[in-house]
Image 1: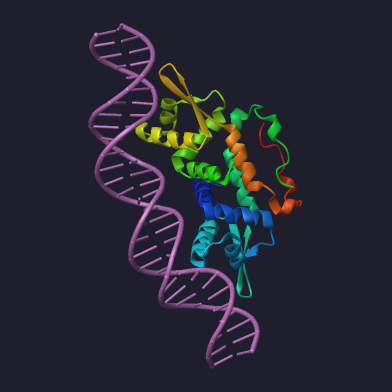
Image 2: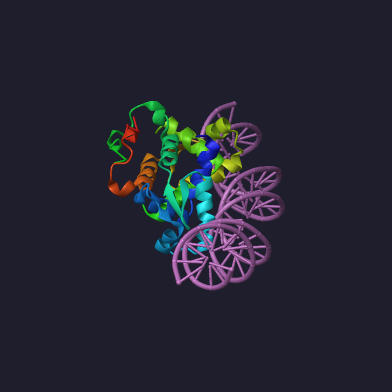
Length: 107
Length: 107
DNA sequence: TCCATGCTTCAATTGTTATTGAAATATCGA
DNA sequence: TCGATATTTCAATAACAATTGAAGCATGGA
């Protein structure tokens, strides 16, 4: 993942509604949620939601699939990981620095 | 860490220069770097750098200390971790989802 | 085929952010 | 004390992002 894509992903997450959407989808898992459910769960107007989903999709943080007349969105876990990896890469010259923080992060 | 602080931190990182600054400081470790060194390393003008450091400081992603006439900045690792924790919290309802990703992230 | 539902697109408005150069402040060494 | 170095502040400009409501486009059921 290149630096430009990382900035795009961070910018996509750096917004109240989108951060809430992304987290909801992360917690929901691969089965995802329809646009309608997301909007309802978070109190976001349809056109506004659509705008935000487009940003998240462009940043490759979520994927969508059509299911009859619903659009189902789900989190893209790989992008999330590449993001985290980028931020922490080669931390402290690779020297031991935070032994307490290496617990399992993904179940 | 509250959601508002998370958005602030993400917004601080969602910018080319600041992401580069933060990464440089993460890789440098606790000893940190002076403002001048950072600007020189990344080709950022002093006033612009100062603006960005203020953003990163406000977001608690970096800390600074005065050392004679230099200002030394260093990454705030705790904030970085809280950020990562927030994004991945309760991933997939807590069900196993990505066993391959649990390798140590911090040396 | 027609209507209702689910979602997206568009245009306008408003607010926020980055960059620049010049000026200010503060510390150090001669 | 004076000049040089290190950094921050300020004001102006230009670019970008979020929200709203109305209109558009599919899909599915009566």
